Length: 210
Image 1 (spheres, rainbow, N blue to C red):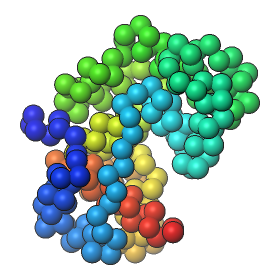
Image 2: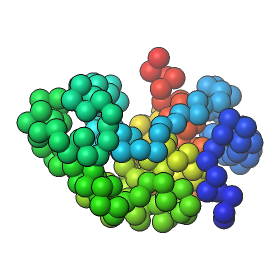
Image 3: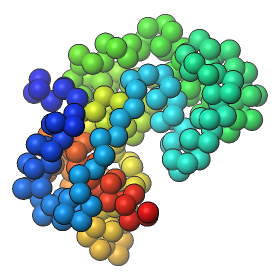
Image 4: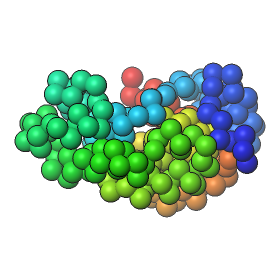
């Protein structure tokens, strides 16, 4: 559906929320308890891809700290500038060897035009995912977060997100945290607005920890 390529805005988010909470009692309860989630958004850029790679399997705070140290060596966060930063300095900034290699691969893909971020705006969610995961270092979770946060697609889904499964378990008072596959299956009922459901679950997760 073409209209779903349009990014969420402060005007469209409440409209989609109303539809979702009218269909799912769990999401309605989250909305009543925690309110409208923030319209989190990031730039459609190499910098965002690097940050999401850094966030793989670590806390947001840890990734942000590494990103701050990286900017001391690469303030403009352009692919060519990043590739000029020695791997040794990346390691000192907090990159693992694997994540440094991943980000170098992404930079090379952008410079060679194997990946063109501006062209992704005209692509469907499925096409965006296919193009992103074709790049070494970008898996379904990283691509899903980029699609959700940078492109703000309404149905974007970050499969494998730990905070989402924990938030669902907390919201339903489950003794065992669901598997990622179980959450993926559950999320089918939220189509074509899984990205907005994600925002509700993340908002609940963060609000409980404040």
